[in-house]
Amino acid sequence: MLRISRVRQALVVTGITSLMLASTLVAGASTMSGKFNAADAKLVPAAYKGTTLQVATDATYAPDESMSGTTMVGFDIDLLKAVATTLNIKIHENSVTFANILAGIDSGKYQIGNSSFTDEKIREKQVNFVDYFQAGEGIYAKSSTKVTFTGLMSLCGLNVAVENSTSEQSDAVATAKKCPANKKLTVSSFPTQTEANLAVSSGHSTVGFLDSQVADYVVLQSHGAFKSVGSAIEVAPYGIATPKTSAGKALAKAIQAAVKTLIASGTYGAILKHYSVSAGALTSNQIILNGALS
Image (cartoon, rainbow, N blue to C red):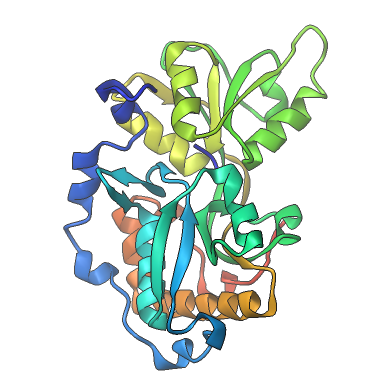
């Protein structure tokens, strides 16, 4: 997963303009709602029935998850709501800094992590993942930039803004160690994507490095202030996280079944289309558990 000021301009640039996201929730709402499925619901472990499951989400990552006033919105949010309806479970979304989500699941504070997590082998040691989407890593910069991007080594010589604990932070830090002395890569890390975007807007950082569809959204909402640089790299699956326990694994299997049901019904496709992220859609046989590529 990947994430200037709290003034009006910043809200536009980061793509969390309340009016736009609120309005997108109206049209087609009925096609984006799940429907109870008894067979899928039977898979929910007893430990999680009759209670409200706490979900951890970093809501600074439009169009995946962000805030519209006091309401959390985005394609991840709508998808999990549809999953909850399918499974007849109650959920409560909590806005949590991305770097704290996996630890919160590990401690038992949260039962689900729903925050554009790239499924990685190192993360699978801590949680289970239900793969449900795929995305790459993307770069954006001010429209006036002369920067080109053809791969990680082309970040050498730049100041790169990333969100803490993201795949992009890990990749940028690893790349910095490989850069020649005369082309140092400076990695500027921030608690939220909003702050990382501010670093680019203010000129502190040369480029923003984040998930590809989120980078595209930031550019779209900047009204010409930013542009995408190069093509997406390192395409990998996203996963919904559950605890690394027997009950957590059973919950993951229930969520997996629900996502497959939503694909079959057309709800999954409707949600992704609604947020213009259909390019990241997976097929039913790609909805697997712990399918990290690296």
